[in-house]
Length: 445
Image (cartoon, rainbow, N blue to C red; front, side, top):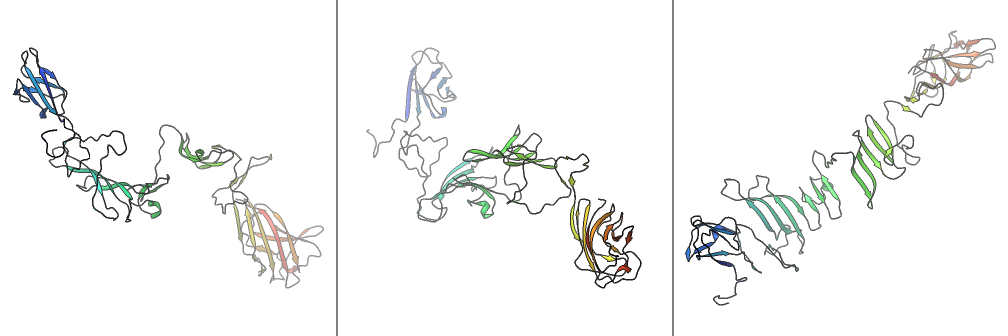
């Protein structure tokens, strides 16, 4: 192409011209189009017209004359098309409208390359940015809204890169703060530069390419989940694509941990109760708490244990509401004694079982009945127990121990042929006299 020194511009046809022959009274001429009516040229019979005075151009295609043309008048129109830069390098360019990059569908076309020419291996080096700027109403200066930055990940002599997203929180001016990044390992991070914020105990969130997520928050919930409109699963658990369980909510706003497989246990947290589930549905009498080789340690209750449906006609309660083990101190009503082993008791509901092994009674002359004080609970009803004795003169009769109604003491009687004779201290006939036995008696809860 003649008239150029050096390379010919590509493409060449950036100016568009169009000519019209007017009809009598014609005012509107439909052109090939323009992007800005202020950047076109209009001539009528060779005389350039003035935009806004002689014509208007506002809709991107029409030229409208202020005064109608006469028949055979010639109107000429000039505008400039968009142009393409092919393999061109631009140094600090500024575009006031928009830039379009178009390719032909082959590899590495329609590409905008932002390149840092500095040769370095520093972490965060080799950085290049896309910066987004704008104007506030009435503001004369542009401000930075956000940036997207590509930079080197690590310090090695390699090609690893980070993609960093920065936003302005309203106070950052020309230096927006990092909001999120994707590192060379394809880990997406928000609010942190650590790919494992939970392991590092720092605030932030991350999701890696394998699908693993980490969420770490200071002083608040780390994860909030919301289901709108209806009831059902809030969290769904799957194994190899198949549902194995849910954390869900039902119509009573009860949280349920429900397994999907047949015979598998779950829990429902209802009003003041924790109820068993089986395969996601309510269960009654089919779910165990623990197993022979998977036992719980201790069970702490403030109430009782309620057993299954009553089968006896006279059953008044199915609740075991107390269990207790302990020791008690045995004392003699007269004189003193020595406990061979510490006396003990076991309380199950309203039944108390005591054990004693008492020796070396010091009193041997009193006619008072032998009476052992110090039981942990008073008896509701008279109860009798077995006793083993030695060195007590009972005329070859046996001895029975008993706890009488409303007493916290043990008394003893010899079982003669005609009467129940009390065992007195004077019946002791040896220094090593022994009274040992057990009694189970009922108490008032």
